[in-house]
Image (tube, rainbow, N blue to C red):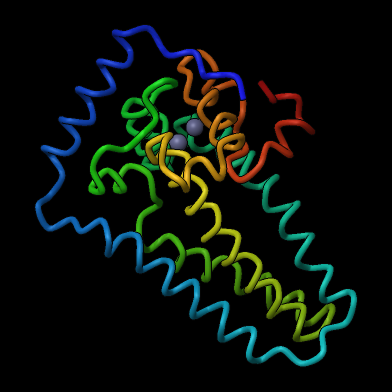
Length: 221
Ligand SMILES: [Zn+2]
Ligand SMILES: [Zn+2]
């Protein structure tokens, strides 16, 4: 694995100063462990409650799972490129939280969090997975009508598992490089670190879970 060339020292120093400011301004009531646990518990409950209702899924119903994995990464790629790195009203919040905040706090060569409270700058808001349920339910019902109930259930399972795994992976990329969890995903972390280069962040490596759609869309660096 080639080492990631560090950003020039001033960029790294600016990121460290921004992280110190971010932590100083974070409300005292913010609890990183609660932020980490709520989406995982909620996602686990959605997944478990769908799995226990499964009958005997047809091949078509099972194919929903790989379809979600591949199409989901395409959605992630486009969401990241078009909404997280461009200010699009009325979704400016996404741009401010990601392009402005996340990419200022973490740059190539200075990717690691040093305090659990920095999870506030890594994870989606705790309620985002609830919004995912709201958005995915009509699609699940449509799939259930088309391919049977199991297809709808497997769609809910795979979309929620996808979201949870996305959060695990992105968090792992931002853990200290020597930690066991970070080393397990070192290649993917290196891909994401190149995206955190200010010169590349609006042009390359928008895939966070895997580089698949960067490969397909010619944005792999
Ligand atoms: Zn990141
Ligand atoms: Zn980004």
